[in-house]
Amino acid sequence: MTSIDRQRLNELAHDCGIASIGVTNAEPFDGLGDLLAARIKAGQLRGLDWFTEERARFSADPRNLHATARSIISVGVPYRMAPVACPDDEPRGTISRYAWGDDYHRTLKQRMRELHACLERELGYVIEARFLVDTARIVDRAVAARSGLGWYGKNTLILVPGHGSWVLLGDLVVDIEIEPDEPLRPKCGRCTACIDRCPTGALQPGYIVETPRCISYLTIECRGAIPHELRPLMGRWVFGCDDCQEVCPYTGAASTDEDADFEGRALDNIYPRLRWLLTMTEAEFRETYRGTPVLRTKRAGLARNAAIALGNSGSDADLALLEQVVQTHDVALVRGHAAWAMARIDGAAAAPFLRNQFAQELDEFVRGEIEQVLGCSA
Ligand code: B12
Ligand code: SF4
Ligand code: SF4
Image (cartoon, rainbow, N blue to C red):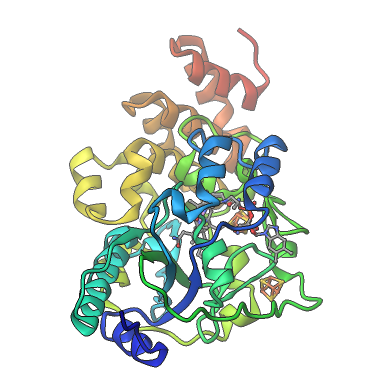
């Protein structure tokens, strides 16, 4: 069977909307299973219930996915769109760039399917393939690093030449042999800008993200109350966090891309109005975020995050709305975080309302939140 010429593969990928690729074999990833098990044991992935040692060990050997796999094409799709100005007419939160437009899982899978079809056409025979994006069954960054698609930055992300870390990753696992690429040399040198910038101290030396402290985890994956000590550090992020990427010199130097799938559909998909997030209906939430990654956090999670962001950035002018949220929001999680936000904006001004609310509040969580911010007792 003939295989594909490497240069031709690049061209086909490009035609399918995939800017960068790297190729590696489908051998197991040496030491990865043990590394992941150690990270789990150390609590660095706490909160991600699906991230079990069993899944982690499975993901270290691509042949678990596909017994006859021979090669993996690591695909990189950049998503740095032109900057959008944030109007300052009212308080707004920030959504991380990858979530401005369409859900990347769908976009990448579709482009990988197109590449697979092109390959079959080009070679004239059937190719068994698996299409993976962001699953627990393979470690996308490990594939990208071994295939030379990019190198590990100290922010633990893969930096792709010309695009920095503004690149989403997918894996096209195939049963044909393709000439593999060499891994790239890491280029962080003495820079530690991302570690220094991380607002919560989640990013640590040694290529470690403490998941339970990462704003990305807190705003997207965490379903319950956000720990009090982390809330003031979350700034205006309401979905994900890009701080450890924005500060990176390689990522800063990245070219902007034009890709309709990743463009923010409207301002509320980039810098959403915080007051609106706190009062939006389920229908409004679904309409605005339909088909985007933001749906993952659900309406209650996004409203909870908005309460924190408003607490961190709002003024006394927002207290009346927050009072209304504490009294009437249909989700206790949001009411409790709104009480926190009032105290964060102006503890003295909020105290009479919060004391009064505490006296009549029936929900245990909301009572607990008020108790903590006021120091009042039952
Ligand atoms: C779980 C997960 C998260 C969790 C946990 C992060 C974590 N600690 O891994 C949370 C929710 C916090 C998260 C956040 C984000 N994520 Co995420 N996440 C994943 C997911 C699903 C699994 C990652 C995983 O297996 N982690 C566990 C182990 C493997 O990670 P680790 O302990 O950091 O170890 C790795 C590296 O640090 C490195 N390493 C470890 N030690 C050493 C030592 C040396 C010397 C070197 C060189 C490297 C090295 O090797 C390990 C294997 O990759 C992947 C998709 C996938 N299936 O792979 C996306 C993925 C990593 N996430 C991605 C993105 C975009 C993000 C965010 C930027 C989203 C955002 N804007 O909010 C943030 C960035 C946070 C950060 N700085 O990493 C992209 C990264 C793209 C890229 N260019 O690298 C991925 C690949 C999704 C995708 N398919 O595109 N994520
Ligand atoms: S995404 Fe934000 S919180 Fe998480 S490691 Fe990066 S800077 Fe820190
Ligand atoms: S900010 Fe500096 S240390 Fe962090 S990934 Fe970029 S170059 Fe590396």
